[in-house]
Amino acid sequence: METKNFFFLCLFLVTNLLKAENEPNDNCSSANLIQLDQITSGSIQSLFDKDYFKISIPIEGTYALDMFCKDTGFRISILILNENCDQISVLSRSQGIEKINCNLIFCNPGIYYFKVSNASNTIIQEPYYFNLVRNTTDIHECNNSFLDAFDIKLDERVDVLIDGLLVNSPINNYNFDQDEYFKLLIPSKGILKINIFDLKGDDDLNVIVYDKNENFINCICCIPIGSDSSVLESLICEPGDYIFKIKTCNSPRIKTHTSCSFIASFIEDVTECNNSFNEATLIEIGQTMVGYFGALDSLNLDIDYYKFKPGKIGLFNFDFIDFNDYVEVNLYDNNYNLIQNFWKDKMESTNSGNYPLLCDDQYYYFSLKYANNLNNCDPANNIVKYSFKMNILPSDPYECNNKFEDAFKIYPNQILYPFMDNRMDDDYFLFNLRYPSEKAIISISDIDDQNKVTIFVYDKNFRIRNYIVPKSDTNTIISQMSLENNDQFYLKVHYNSINNFSPIKIKFDKIVLDVQTNNPKGLNPNCNIQTEDGVLKIYTDFDLNNYQISIFNYSGILVKKALLSGTESSINVSNLTCGIYFINFKNGITNLTKKFIVF
Image 1: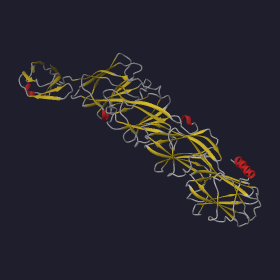
Image 2 (image 1 turned 90 degrees about the vertical axis):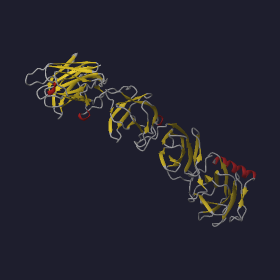
Image 3 (image 1 turned 180 degrees about the horizontal axis):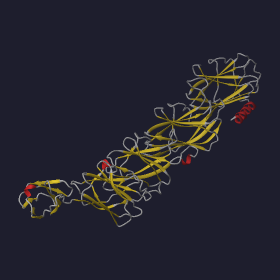
Image 4 (image 1 turned 90 degrees about the horizontal axis):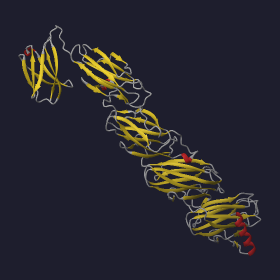
């Protein structure tokens, strides 16, 4: 610009096309009318001489001002006045400097006045020359406030020039071009990514993002001039207009000249903004979800929260579909208490033995945290896409029985198939003995070196009554346990193998509550029963009149009572459903139980 104007100065001087001032021009009324792109000359003839020039600015934008004077022993002061002759801006040439080269930013077209005066105590010996010309290198000026933000589009390259003096500034006479505002429409939730590049000039730059209400969202501070590029990422939680500001880090000067380019892009992520429990994304069981790590918050972390309701007892299973890195997964209950923490990656698609067991019909939460730190030093790796599917896997049919108070009730002749759902799993079962001297016979099979367990039996006061570590035999039987004078017992299965993460199956062939005749006086009454056409026929060698007669179903629930007499009698059982039943004959001496089947 300096070389060009000096060339024009020489040309005008040689061809006598130079526009000289006409005295007197000491006020706005007598100001000399000048044109754009016209070199004008003037002289300060006394210490108090003032020269006024009038010019019309046709459109808003940036205009380059060049002033030249060979006499370097004085300071020139230039005031810019509006059409009412009110001062709106000021600039000056320092002593010892021949030229003034700066940009003036006019945001209101119209009539303006330039007032040139001597700011020193020395008579100026040489004339001065100046020229004002339209500068089209920055097409985005007057965008120096939120209200004046320049509309841009996604994926559009925008060139920014921070250079010059804001002539129409309402703040003060020295409001230099320091802030550039841009407005962008974001269509949905997701991640806004601003890539800043080609940083050149005199000052480092700040980039700040605001919402439409001018609330601060995010920033990247003092990007060094000369940087190849820098990236600012921001979570967008609501569709609408967003504004970002490009600002110099230091106070600008008249000769500050800083430029950059940027491109704003957007990644749609309907799961955002889910960075807390209250903002967790609600998902369905079996639903495939897609999300992104990378929009940095104040802690340089992007943690995504999800919320779900299992709908049934089962195991929490989480598998990545398209991801090849580690993620920390935290599972929480409805009160935000941590249930379990574990790490997942694509290769760990079946993290067996580590599945958390979900027992309550409530909402659960889990969070995903990218294991690698994301930071602005490596912007290319700052946004990471992931996809996953969350399921509830079947547990063993007796869960959730992991403590005494939640023990699963079992009955005589029942076959169980419990297995280890996760490495913290212990299974508890509850059974009853109804009569003195009854014995429980428990057999275990399918035991091998990988599936080792310890079986404990507790009484109702939670005291251990017996235990065994089954060996790898085909069939291991716990010896008969005499459990006298106690009607409630607990069976605990503790899984010893934690290195095998595949589900462990323990088969109980039988839990037999073997009901035997209790006859302390040595009597051996004879009793035969049979069913025919819905009638239970009873034949005994004792008088039934002296006995309490009760019928229990297979689960030990009382279904019928009867009063009988004689040694032969019958009971109508046609209203009983098909199955196995037990009839009990009891008096003060004898307690006899027989089994019968209703077809």
